[in-house]
Length: 308
Image 1: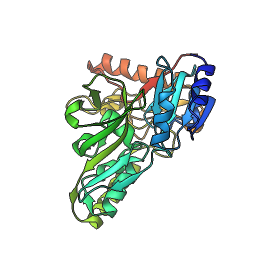
Image 2 (image 1 turned 60 degrees about the vertical axis):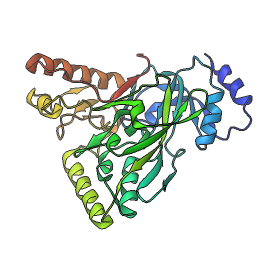
Image 3 (image 1 turned 45 degrees about the vertical axis):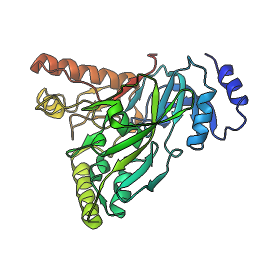
Image 4 (image 1 turned 45 degrees about the horizontal axis):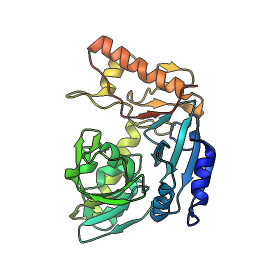
């Protein structure tokens, strides 16, 4: 698939209002601040515009939906497909009923937590600790501080490659720890969710959010480029404890290193490390923990693209 295919499709869809870019540097869009270029990138104007764009994308074109890029590593050889950026585009959030919030996939998860508290809805406070968007939280059942995204999902809206919208129920998905699979089997992308919460004390909720954020700031290396937790926690244990006990805090490859503050974080000061450096650190941590403790660390972060 080459650029002309996408250009012809776009020209055949005169209603498109978004922006199509070529050779987009993904280091600008991922929180590790490194990685290769995307062959094409689309910034939709809104959900309707995104649906129109997808109707013109050839069937074989690889598609990657990106929110804040906080759980993503794009290899140095880049992504040979089209990246769709949702943050800043699918940004609608609203009260849908007495206890439900409608949030599009590009809305930052912490914004949902604050919005809920400001409308005296409780149960979404944990979202304040997730450094991504609603779409990413749905795709991986993101969670922290005892809460998980799908615990509060009433239903979701998805978009297929033909630009058709679908309303899906939780029963349409296999949902587990950092794991979500569409039982329908079709390739669909999360574009919105209805979140069912409880009426409560908004002031107490805002205070709880403040405490969670203070806890996060104290425990995580937020002042340096990172992608959040790199590995899932093994059953009955914590990935950070295993990595730290293995003596890997501060271990570096190239410009990236395992954080001295939180061993389940890889930091990339000044964006100096390459995607290859970070991937090598991930693999080294997995090998070392497996050799020392017989535990297989499973990645939370998604790795896409081509090696250089």
